[in-house]
Amino acid sequence: MKRNFLLVVLLLLPGLVAAATIGVKDVAEALQKPFASDVVQARGSDKSGIFDFQGDFFQQSEIAAIERVQRGRGLVSFRFTYPGGNRVPLSMFRWEYLEPTQQEVISDAETLWVYLPDNRQVIVSDVAEISRQRQDNPMTFLTGLGNLSRDFQIRWGSPNSDLQGNYVLELRPRRASNLIRTLQIVVDRRAVLDYVEKQQVGNYFPIMATTVMDPAGNKTTIEFSKINFNVGLAASYFRFVQPAGVDILRPEGSKLPF
Image (cartoon, rainbow, N blue to C red; front, side, top):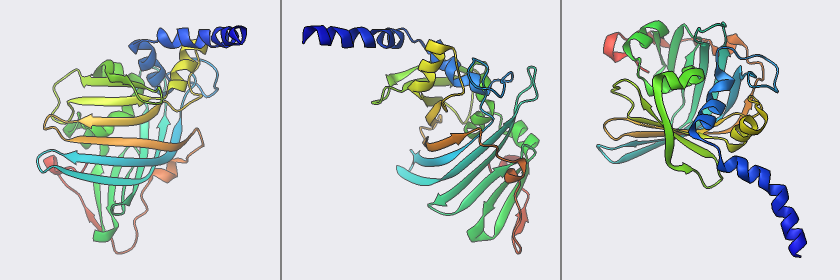
């Protein structure tokens, strides 16, 4: 009995040692490298890339001033185009809310559409203008996943792991932000161990959940599930096709919708 127990311990020991020595830098690199500007298509190295992903999301927003909780869910899709060098990847995205009301937020990296079917309206904005007006928008961090260390100070969350052993990072903006006080990211432990033990990335989608806390104490958590990546999403999927009878609104300045 003791011999069998010792054998099990010896078989598990390498994994236990690796887990015990994993640091913030390891987790941060495992999170960022699949989205870095020098990624390649093939998996099995530290330069493997994630070029698109699609799956379900659940969102919970807590509004501190009125002690109100709002929940929503739907389908999220992203597509990244990597121009190479040190240039930032172009990001296309599509958030399709099914609850509590139907709504679509779509971008082809040049134009942003916010479609409100119940109102028969679509709000159209220029992405470059949004970037100038809302550089610290918490919803845009997903477009810069490959270089989070440039924009955020990264440290362990408290606690530094969830009940399933996934790692929790806390990010704080390097410059003052009116929209982000902290950004918490839950990183899939399988992605981290794959990077630490095998120097591989791109075999697991690393992001399990994010939580943004703003200076006013409002909190938005997004949980991702059933994620598939590198499925070959076409660029045309990220362009809004306007239904007949829908009014077009073009906000200006501080009234930008995103």
